[in-house]
Length: 499
Ligand SMILES: Cc1cc2nc3c(=O)[nH]c(=O)nc-3n(C[C@H](O)[C@H](O)[C@H](O)COP(=O)(O)OP(=O)(O)OC[C@H]3O[C@@H](n4cnc5c(N)ncnc54)[C@H](O)[C@@H]3O)c2cc1C
Image 1 (cartoon, rainbow, N blue to C red):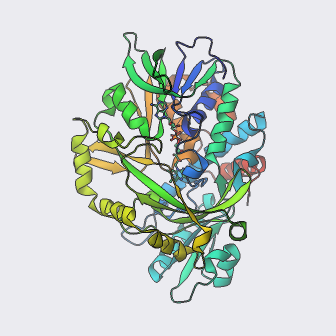
Image 2 (image 1 turned 30 degrees about the horizontal axis):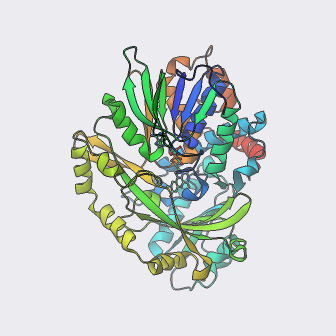
Image 3 (image 1 turned 180 degrees about the horizontal axis):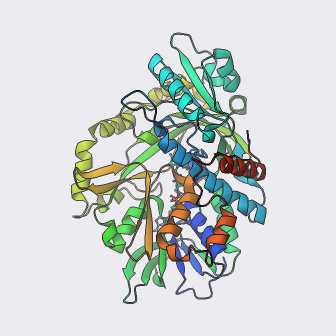
């Protein structure tokens, strides 16, 4: 830990030591090396909550394979606009990581990112027709150059033998594949970024320190109250800028700040269970992330998938997540989190969401009541010859979805992420959980544009920002040449596939 020269009044306070604070901190420090920053983290280390490798799926979410990003329209056509947005947001993350590798801040990209093809796999006439249409729409865009489609048993078996072994011919099936996909260990990446930050002057990370208060001072700065989790001793620092990157807890801290813009927000926690297989005889036969179609009523981020994971140099398989309901906002949180987040200000949106999302509630209750035999049966739909003895349960991270006020319906449930900032931009909270870690660089850029717009000038931060993220300001969904160039460059640096 490096001690900040003015520990009582850092320029920037980052709450939480997950991938989001680490990414924003790394970007800000590149843009303005003289900034003093303090990061507060309740736990004993960084990247232990949702960003920890086993708590998320590690998909370098390029929206290649997740069918929930490509809904079917009423007329039967497939809308790929959300997929394109997420797909090109991941390019910004690749550029930031490549910059840090080039600079030597990340010694070896293989410590956090590996090439793993992304596939979508469906069965049943209707789903096959949908996948075909989705493939036609996507492969027409330069962003999905190289995507392949097949409904041929031998071809799909070549791509992913486990999903075809023992599968009958009762139903038609089809798959798409894109070999430029990745598996990312966001926990390892968080460690690399925090280590890099701590090695710089003016940065300090205080573990086992929980932020318990956010109060405005007369001069507009924030008084950040902290508690030592071992001694319960309280202390405070003041700062002109606060980033609430507290994952599921961000909603609670936003409420503590009492900023007008946060009024009426609430959170809806979704928990998750994986099945995990560390048997190399099995994992060595699967090298892909294979996403299926979500069950009716399930939240969009609960699409089942059979994933190759490469964590600390070891290959494993992960299947799930089986979504569930828990009242905790963090895996290490408290069962009272949800109840404590209910305020007179958000009760109307919360009740409106409860009224409008009966199918989701039924789905989650159904998932919680599922026996492990049911869960295993779901895996067998993907991997027909899976053996129970090779798999064990693992608890995933918590995802707190956003509930926000809505003029017409009283309140809505949102599955994306949102930055909620005070009018004077002195504090900003990141709410929501999807698409998540993969888009951390895009979220950091969002914070810059929202809170530091006056610095984004040619004489200010812009030239350096373009050095870090060369396509900043370019719409990659429209610019094929820029997309090809950045993908080729970042693939070479990050040692992943390019086509
Ligand atoms: C099951 C699952 C699957 C996922 N799959 C993917 C995927 O495939 N690809 C992808 O890109 N994303 C995925 N995500 C989302 C991704 O994991 C998150 O978006 C990302 O990790 C969030 O990072 P964060 O830094 O905001 O939060 P976190 O990693 O949760 O970090 C927040 C930190 O804040 C700390 N904290 C909280 N309150 C306080 C406080 N009061 N004071 C001090 N510290 C505090 C916590 O202890 C924690 O360390 C998945 C998530 C889940 C749960």
